[in-house]
Length: 159
Image (cartoon, rainbow, N blue to C red; front, top):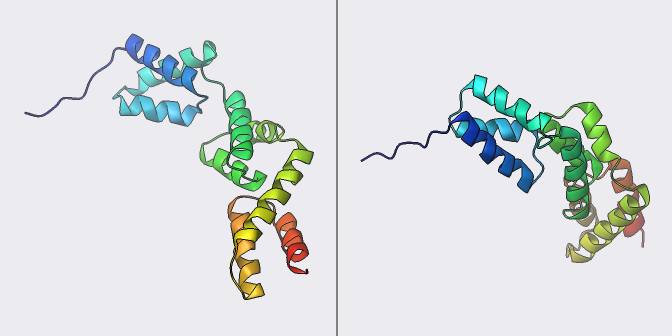
């Protein structure tokens, strides 16, 4: 016996997606992917997305702000990584800019200093060039700006 996929009416799908969006901020791409996974036709997807936007369940500006704050404060990502992730989610440059404005400049620099010093303390590499490379690669991967990274790495390893 083969299990058949559950089918949804447009109203059921709207209700499920309202709950999905109310639980956590979502971008348009996530919502559309969810609707496709539910087996909705393109016409229904458009109708549901419009409904979610009109009823303020879906707002990409709000998503960008929430995403930027969360990834910065919780995961300690830099602006470069946050911007790259928002672009992969299909957000406009305007929304990305608005999201990045949520990050306080002073808090950003303080967090960068803490992350860099914490990571440097965990690097056991004896060769200073390899240690510098490890720290640099780690910080760049986390999305911190190259000029900040190179300056901080030089400062930490000139001691």
